[in-house]
Structures are given as C-alpha cells and as structure tokens.
Length: 355
Length: 279
Image (cartoon, rainbow over all chains, first blue to last red; front, side, top):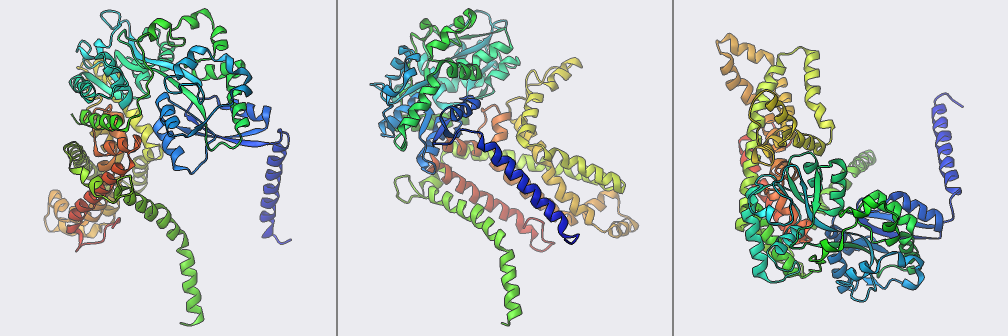
C-alpha cells in the first residue's frame, strides 16, 4: 500500500463502521409492517408518541406539519404526498367533508373511542352531522387575556376592545377569521353569517378600532402580554393557560356576548389504503396514557374525559384548561366555508390593514 | 473541429452542468410556475386581471408605502455607508480587516432572530425605553410604527450597501487622491470629484441589493410594524396564505416588472463607467 492511499483506506473503514453501527441500531426495533403519512399542526403532538406508536405496532409514521389549516389544505390538495390522516380545524373539516376527501372512521375497531366525551362528539355534529369522519383532538375557546392589575374593572365583554378605554394597550389576532368572528359576535350576529351587510359592519368597527390597537399578532400575543407591553389581547384558551403560568397577574375570560369554540379533529382521507392502521393510530391517541402525555405536552383543552378526571382540582377549575359550560353557552363552532364569504373577508381585511 | 477541441468543449459543458441545473431548477421553473398562476383565473382561462389587480386602490397604497420604505432605506444606507467606509479607509491594514469583520459578523445570525431582538429593544417596555426612563427621559413609542420598520430595514440591509462601497473605495488608487490634493483640492472636493464618481459601481450594486429586498420584504413590517402596516409584500403573503395563489402570483409578477423598470432607470447612468459588481 502506498502512503497516498492510506488516508483513503481509513476513510473507507470509518464509513463502513458508521454504516454498520446505523444498521445495528435498526435491527433492535420491531419489524416495520406498514406506514402512515400524517399531516398535523406544528407542535400539536408529542413527537415521542410517534416513536412509541411505531415501537408498539410496527407501523412507521411519516409526519408532516402545517402552520395553518389553509397551508395544510394547500399541501394536501397539491397531491404531491398522499396523506392518510389529517388533523385540522373545524371549518376545514367541513370543507373537506363537503368535498368528499374523507372516508368513514371504522369506529367499531376503536376500543378507546369512549374516552372522548360525548359532549365533544356533539360539538363535531356542527360539521360532521352523523359523527362519521372526525375524531376530536383538542379544543378550546377564543377570549381575552388581560392583566388584572392594570384594568379598571373585571372584564366580561368584548366592549373593552372597542370602546377606547384601553387605547394603545390592545393586541388583536392577526388572523382574518378569528378577528372577524369575535367582532361579529360583539355586534350580536352569528359568526357564521353570510350576510354581507353584517360582515361590512364588523369591518367598519375594526377600522374604527385600528388606531387603538397596539398590534395585530399571532404567536406573540401571549409573550407581549406576559411582558407587560400591552394590557390585553385576543387569544386562544390554551395559549392563555401558558400565559397565566408565567405571569400570575393575568386572567382569561370568554366574554358574555359569546365567542368561537374551536375544535381540531383527526380524519382519515380517501387516499388511505390501510384504514385499519389509521384506526389503530386514532385509537392510540384516545388511550388515556397517550392522551395524558399529549395534554402535558400541549396544554390545550383535551376532549378526553379520562384525562380530565385525572387532573388536580386546581387544574379542573381553570377555565383555560377545562372551559366551564357557562362560558361556552353563547359560543359557536365555525362552519363557514363559503368561498364568497372568505373572499369578501380577505378583501375587507386588506382594506383594514391599508388604513 | 478537431478532436482535442471537441473534448475541451465537452469538458466545459460538463462543468456548466451544475450552473444549468441551478438556473433551470431554481430560477426558470419557478418563474414559469409563477407566470402560469399569474395568467390564470383558477378555472383554466387566461386572464390579465391578476396582474392589473396591482392598480386597485388598496394595492396601490401598499405599493406606494413599500416604495417609500425602500427608497428611505436605500438613502439612509448610503448616508451611513460613506462616512463609515471613509473612516475605515484610514485605518491600518489589520484594523481594516477587523472593522470589515465587525460589519459582516451580524450577517452570520439569522435575520429573523435579529429582527426579533430589535423588536424586544424597541417595544414599549423594551430595553431602549428602560434605558431612557433611567436617564430621566420620556419613553419613546416607536414600536409598531413606520419608524420601527425603517430602523429594522436599515439595520438589516446596511452591510449589503457597505460591502460593495467598501470594495469600490479600496480599489481607488491612492496616487489619484494624492495628485488631487497636490493640485489644491480640499477633502470635500476630493470626495466629490474622485471618491464618489469612482465608487459609483459599488454604490449602484449596493443600491440594487438594498432597494430590491426592502421593496419586497414582508417579515420586517410584520414583526416591527405589529401587523398594522401593509407593504405590498404583506398583501402578496396574505393572498398566498388564504389560498389565493393566482392573485398572489399576479401581484408578484407586477412587482417584479416594477422593480425591473426602476432598476433600468437607476442603471441608465452606469453604461459608460466600469461594470458594477451585480450587473
């Protein structure tokens, strides 16, 4: 062997050694019997659970994430990847059910389906009339997170966002749908309205409110209020819980005019060839220990009654974790998928932002 | 053509392989896709309405605002770059390298992280206001305003202006400046008659590299404008995020055409002199 070749030989040996170690690692695992491709919101499932599922069943998971239901839909409908399972928002479930994208969940193959409270299946009836397609994953409300040491009186109405009392101290959601929904509720309309005059009235109110708004944000609402940069903000209940954890002065309320109660669900797509595997995964998610791990990873409200029962008294009474019946009395599930309505809202939103 | 020539041509075209793959895969194909969406109404019919949508009042307003931010940012960058580069020019060789390093250093960090840091500095309860109140001044309210967006844009794009200007000025032969001084030119005249004209190629490529991204940016205005300010980039983002890729692509194409026209206008002065780095 010449001197020159020597380093090359070392490289080859090292490469071989590395490959062997990698292969050796694979050998210990259970044999892979199949694959499921799943698309979900980002940070909406404890990634360790995916590995646990593969270890238990031998079904490999290909996991994709999307930030918004729209992004999920774009990825799904491009057809580049054939997803077996999707998880998304209520209105997106409705849209996809209407388009015939889903197949029925084989409920009889799912032992743990009863862990999900009947109440949540009833919520789903708003978009899945016979509870055929959707398995509730997490749910919650939209409300106001505020610093109770900085407000003049306890807050119970959306009015505080619009009456100018807290000018410059308000953070709104930078989300067309959410912001229109709460404004429509404040005006006393249904958040699923398709009446153009009502939607325009909501926009006029938002335009009037804009000078009082400190900023329109999505993910940073919580941090800004925790840091004390604003007194109040429109926020999802799960985010509000985390906010309260890091700043005890904060309080969360679902205003009395009502709000949106949102529910994210899993569904099996029409592309899924092995429905049995998909059902196994959904059943896995309903299992108490799995749902608990997931709950502790995300801290949104879980529809799993077994998990709710296992919570401490303090946690059970926290309206951000377990929204009480009274707070969701006037709330509605969003089922608006009419393209005319969403297009109108998009246009009106751009106009609002250009003011 | 003899055999050796043929072989060398072959080898050369082999070398241009990666370039071709890059150009086709990352420039030509995406452009075709964008143009296809831009010229389609979603139902398979050809239309120009997505591109002419740029003339609607809301889009026009966003466009003007983008233009304002882009021009403002470019001017500020130029005004900041020249004094800084002139100061660097007179440093010793090792210090010169170090000062250049200091300028490039922030570029090693992801720009969104830098903007997030700036957001924390400028926010109402942020570091800047903490500092000001400690010193007994009134706190400033620049978070979520045009000023904040402008500060962010200048902060982010300044190196792209400084580097080409630095290169251009360092290339100027010291003898030329000496000669001017011997003939009685003051330092301002030296700058106006020698340094400025000779650094023009750097200035122009810097302008392109600052003007274009600040014109099309949407992240800076989202993070520092608090979602209250709408640049044309934000409009395009909204169109794509709400699933309306046809209008989104149409507006992108219109913006591209606009940028091309404004660049042609800037570059007209550059035909005689030295070729600039970018063009």
